Structure formats: C-alpha cells, structure tokens
Length: 408
Image (cartoon, rainbow, N blue to C red; front, side, top):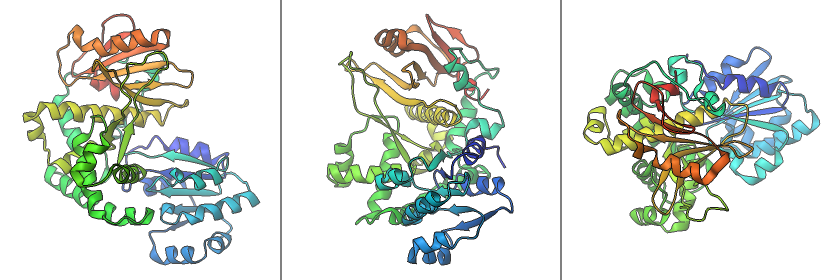
C-alpha cells in the first residue's frame, strides 16, 4: 500500500468535527484508506451494496436513526444525497466529534442545499490520484519550500524517460500494478465506460449519456488549453448551456478541472477564460491513444501533458499544506502566459512555468517577468521547471529548477 499523506488530514478532522467527508474519483483508494484508519469501534456500511442502498433510499431518516451505537463509515454516500439531511439532523442531536466518516466519488457539496445544511458540521478532505511523492515514498517538500520563498533543488539528472513513463501510467493505484502500457490503457478505457454509465446516472438524469463519453474524450484534447464551450459544443452538436451543464458533471465526478484565469482590478489586459486540466495524465493518454513512443514523436503533446502532470502534482501537495491556496493561470492579450499561479490567503503570488526541454534562455522567463512586473511586491517567487539537473537564478526571485524537485 502506498503512503497516503491525506491520512493525517482525516485523523485531524475526526478529532474535532462530527462528520468528515473523504471525496475523490472512483478507484483512487478512498475505501482502502478509510479501512486503514478504523477499528472495531466503527461500523462500515457501503451504499455500493444494493441491499443497503435500497433500505436507505426507502427511509433515509429511519436508516440513520437505526444505525448501531458506534462510529459510522458510509462508503459512496453520493449515491443517495438525501442521507446528508438525515446526517445533519443526527449531528444536531449529538455533536460528538468523529461520529461519521463518509466517502464519495462525486462532489455532493457542489449541491448548494447540501453544503449549506452541513456547514460547521462536516469537513471535507480531497483524496486525489497518487502523487509522485506517494509513489516513491518521499514526503513532499516542494510547495512548502516555495511558500517559504526558497528555490527547491533536486539531485536527479535529466528525467525525460521517467517523465514519459509516469505521464502515460498516471496515478490511479490499479493500473500502476499492471506490467504493460496496453494493459494499463485497457483499465482506463473500462474505468471511463463504467463511470459514465453508472455514476452520472446517480447524479442526474441526462438524455444522451453517450455524449458524456464523447465530451470526456474531447476534454483530453483540450487539456492545458483555454476553455471554449461554444467550440466544444459545436463538435458534439450541443448548445452552450448544455455543454456547460455536462462539463459541470465531469467536474463533479473529479474527472476534469477548470483552472481559472488570474485577474487584477489594476491590470485590464488579461484573458479571463479558464484552462481545462484532466485530473490524471494516464487517463488522458488512454483516451487519446498516446503511448510513450507516440509522445516522443509528438513533442507538442508532451509539453501539454507535462503541464497537466505538474499542475496535478502541485494541487495534490496543496491538500497537505496548512494554509488555503488558490490556483490560477495567467494570460494577457499579448499572449504572454504563465502556466500556474498560486496565491495564498493574504494575496502573495507564486508563479510556475513548465518547460519540457533541458536547455534554457532568457526568453523562457518572459511570462514570469511580465507577471512579476504586474504584481510588484505581491510577487514572491517565480520558478521555471525544466528537464535539467541544477537550480539556477535567472534574476530577482526567478529560478530555473529541475522538474525532479517536485518530489525530491
């Protein structure tokens, strides 16, 4: 079993909060992690058990009231959102910390009535696909160092072959156990098919579930690019409102994320469209039929995949940071851009640009320098991640850093 650094967040939340909701995509290891945290004081119930599901669906209030007098795990609770109201009522009668440990493969908290009803009663913990730190068993340090305004470093030399392998394999635990690219791709294809057919129907009724599969495949080609809902809708024969709804469902299932554009009231020449990122590069590659060999022949694809890979690594590390962090991308009307902007609660800005090559020149820092000039004193550190072997200063608070520093 891989170390899951989110376990500490769950234990901490259970110590002072009545309910903890562990949420993330299917098959990332939520059940495995939860079972590793409980003992005989807990009762484990899964709503993937059809009998339990039917009992709970028939009488949600009675189901919660009749639970054993133990601490309760409810697995895949998103299958029956009505239970959240009954859980709220139970918590209001007894606010003892750590009473409920819930898991869900859809973000039920995006439904306003649920998030409002459980405010102050429940804490959510996001469990992502495996990070490179977890796969290698290295405690994460990159983001911590960055927030301390220190340039991270790494001992690894060029990593292109390793990066290709990791990008194609992805971070889901099951395909990582498979010995070939073909078998891993087969797992992802089955995963996508089952997810769309089953979990989408749990969330809402849609008239054309086949179009959800096509949309997910389409997002794999847009990953790392600006969102254009009208263009995407035209490719599928859907109007803008429908494509927006379907994109929202993919986000609710933790399959894609929209990275918002960084904005400023003082600077008006900014592009405001978000970027699309898949939550896993292995899934992206399987959808697009990309193997390591094909990526070598298509370097432009490698650059976009690497950007998504780095973005996901940083998002994962952010879940283990004590302070809330907000992620953006930067692009202005001169088409100057920075791949990832991280902003903390007091408005300090940290910028990350990703380059797949091992050689650098000053032009590679154009986006970081533009962002530094715009943000002034708010700018704390700019890092250009590249496939090199040493950390080098390229100006005031600007550094080139090896990609391996992400998990060093």
